[in-house]
Length: 198
Image (cartoon, rainbow, N blue to C red):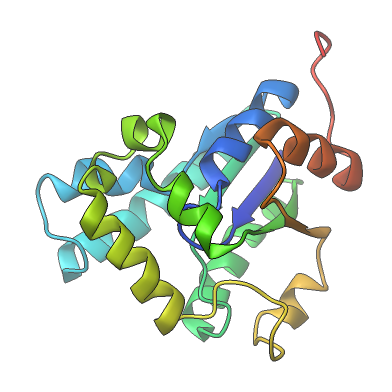
């Protein structure tokens, strides 16, 4: 199984680009909020119960996908590139894929903040992510995360870059690219298989 991890800051287009990749490859999309939204209905964001459940469900989905006949899984994630715990978490996902004979591809998306604030309110995003429908709150969260965490490379060297260098990896500035254009670039660079109808 090919595991494609798309990472980058909030509203950069991870889920939308992931959807476009899956349409061309027959892979399944496992976006960041697929586990977050149902658990938010029971436990508040950031509580120990919330964190444990999201983490365990994500790991189990990746384990089952790797052991299945799925050709690939696209997983999207907001990754603090200087957090050793998150580097270890992503490493564990790559090891799950590898243990089943699979490989991992890493895709970093970067966009101008003004473009991300515009994308924060797109219908596809709000349809799939109920917790983002309070736009004022989600905009504040986007800005807070930008200030608090290192969500892209391109500045001072991050702790994750040694890890990135060990895997097929592409960094794309998709500020002025459509999801389809971004997906096409990912498929070409990472040499991912296309389904027969594309």
